Length: 369
Image 1 (tube, rainbow, N blue to C red):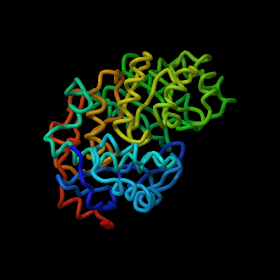
Image 2 (image 1 turned 60 degrees about the vertical axis):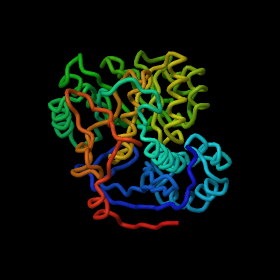
Image 3 (image 1 turned 30 degrees about the horizontal axis):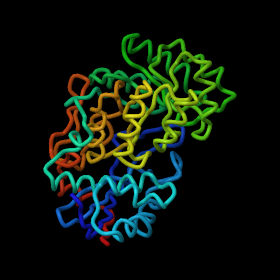
Image 4 (image 1 turned 90 degrees about the vertical axis):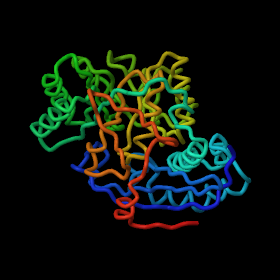
């Protein structure tokens, strides 16, 4: 159903994290989130931009995303007449990069389109499951005792898999102790967020003794060859995250032997439709995929659950309960974990219903164009 785009609202909200979340590139204590509300002739749709406040995880950051949407991407969408969500990426293709900004716009149009048709994202993508296994991402702590206490809490909550953030100086000993804590049968993986160099390959191979599901993005995002060398040297499967920004980069990484597993983050690759194409490529090449997280609110978390229900997502993703990060979410029925799984939302659109009163309460700025 082609939609006529009328107005766009930029909604900035501030959400405090339950606990600081530390990775190799910094510490998050509060999320400054950019939400986009697209008003169309068939109703509204919401999207969430996953860019962080500073350009440390990726070149994108929240202020820059709002600027590029306002000055470039939105005029390109509205200047060509009615469109469907499937046409968003084509209209935005002349603008290089800015995948997170593009994904947020596509997400909002997709939400509006699906709501107007009474359909849900799960069905549009062709997902097969109504529940998906839930993993949790555990940050870096000041002490090992704090780490172990946090992990034990997540084990008690029933998560299906633990992911540990690592960096030089915080890797072998934390992983060893956590493996001892959770036992050999529980899924355990690590994520370095590009913190290591090729010269660290021998050191990273020492992680092989811990029976990890995978090691995620240990080297810089541009170093695909380095990841291929690590994959040949290590028995732990190498997973790419930051390196995968499109279908083409995924195909190239797989061909070079650098990606034995792929982490698909819709915001990082330009949207859920491109994420589906990357999923299909990986299924065709026999490469396992899983759904990563970017501290999303209930908007992005609901959509991620629908994506993770596709058959190629054979590993638990980072779709943890909303309470993992936020005391109160901006949706009325936030994601919860039951028996190590989350249920795929059943509401039309991306699957959420906003808690409008709370959203208004935490809004720091709102501009409509």
